[in-house]
Length: 191
Length: 67
Image (cartoon, rainbow over all chains, first blue to last red; front, top):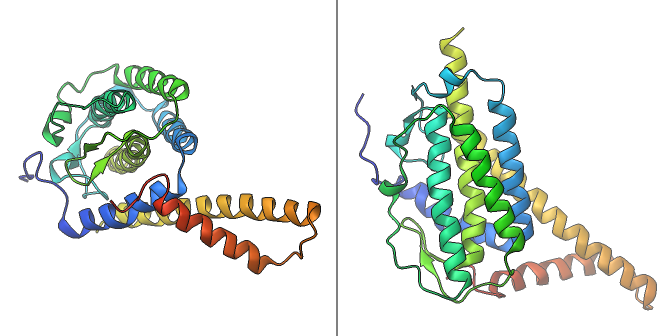
């Protein structure tokens, strides 16, 4: 089965719903600390889902039905590839928040195809947890002030530092659901 | 859409409702406290109005969430 190329984007209706309903709603109901709490909760769920799964299975690519808010090419990922993507994208988000918080311009282009995984490493879960620990400390120590400087997300609108922290939660949540779909597919295969 | 996608949308709704309730309880608690310390009549209609004001304020302050 041929999947669409990375960077193709989301179906139009889905992208518009996220852009015009979910993103504004999340910006209304979340705060810096609530967004951080929610990201922590997602990481806890992911770790609990994966801690008892065999490392070989975590590297196995599975074809799944497209889950909400993921690109078509992402449908054939392994769990470790999702974790790697969350780390790559998370590192970019962390750098963007850091730069915008200093009221500086984030000059690098953010492209979806640049945050795709490629390694499918065995020790990905440990690296993933270690990265998110640094992110938690970073946000905890950050001055909670909304920046005037913004950086556009390729699919949505221009986000300031706070919006990117909210995005970090939404992004982790979306990919946690993808991990659940991959695990379901894996359990069906090993039945 | 896949079952997983519908499940995601269901969870999103639950999370948003929970967060809205969280803010509603905080505002209702502040309002209730105010009725204890100031001579105000306790009326949950007022709490709803305060909640609506809070949500509308959050839409535009500290920044317009639609921009």
